[in-house]
Length: 226
Image 1 (cartoon, rainbow, N blue to C red):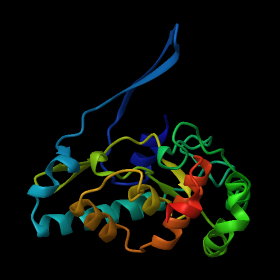
Image 2 (image 1 turned 60 degrees about the vertical axis):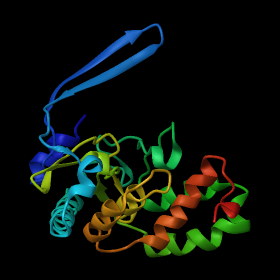
Image 3 (image 1 turned 90 degrees about the vertical axis):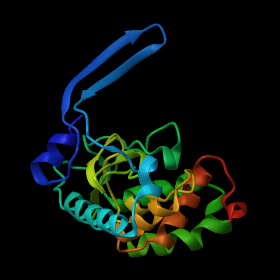
């Protein structure tokens, strides 16, 4: 777990501090636990509908600033596409139960995507993904990877912390938008407003194409999804 030191060293983003990391062997397998400091406030998912329009705007602007700070964190690893620790990337919105492999650059990541969508590449995915590949060829930026309303803590109408950093990674610049608004999860209208204000570049086309690729990887026919 190296995410928090990186965030603390390079940004002013409020996040929990790692206290301890414990592994335990059981008859069902090995389990790891992280002990972290508590972040004050309540999840945005619990308070969104009680916030005023001005508070929603403030939170969106706060989050925009935090995202820009995260994107400026330098990547110390040889792989351009990788987790905070330099390895594979946990992204349940994309692959559900297994990780995206780390890759030396974005081109290698895209080559993997071509292979993984398999039979759907020629019939419906090529036309959707090739424009994304051409437009977002690199470099990658540091992303939280799961800016869901359950992971944004609110106190007194402002962000008091961002939690759940296990999905943090260096990914193409549209990745934060895709993971935040993935249609695999339900979102409130206030949350969508906040995210679209925070991520001022609305990567809707790229996010939809990548979402279809993820569907194909999970065994869902992307040609029938939309």
